[in-house]
Length: 270
Image 1: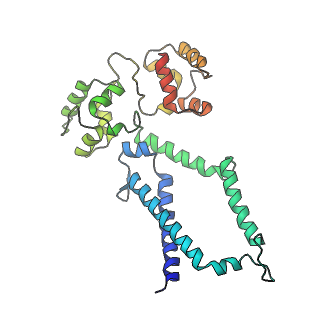
Image 2: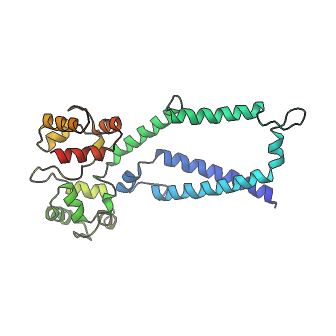
């Protein structure tokens, strides 16, 4: 057993596991959706996979640095010419530098073919959102039922009645949506589906429902009886050019904002 061999093998094994966690995190839903749907793979949720990826990354870096120190002599040999003179910018070094810069620059400027990796990742995230549903707002699963209903325009008493009628246990206005789901072997999304009903007044809730980014300005206005033309003019006065067919995510991307910010402006203009 030698330090050099142990270091090399640790570097290799941590790299392999880091590669696995990278692939898994690449295909997982966004954090808010993973929590909302109790997403798991191989018995671990996204937070556990993220923690594993971070710690393996630290181990890989530490082992890699030690591996570099222990193998410094052969590494420097790679940067010597045929006369055994030190020359940093050798053909091999230049090629390695070019590959690295190619990846970095094409990523920063969103140039193809490198950008296709991000495009595929976004496609996978959107597919997950459609499959599992989106929370009405961030960390909605951590909200007490009373607060959750208030933010989503649902009558708390009616929600409790529906949950009781469905035979759920551990229900109270002060229990969080996540706890209610956990106590009944459900996901927060499934609990929401049981109680999801537009407010009786038809008023626009302070927090948007799931799938906000895919909804258009016209659809939101129609849902809450708002004047679409007046809303478009109101958004225009806020410096946002749009129309009834524009999706909230498209507007957010075009203006450098979050979809919830656009909804917030619409809520103010209602």
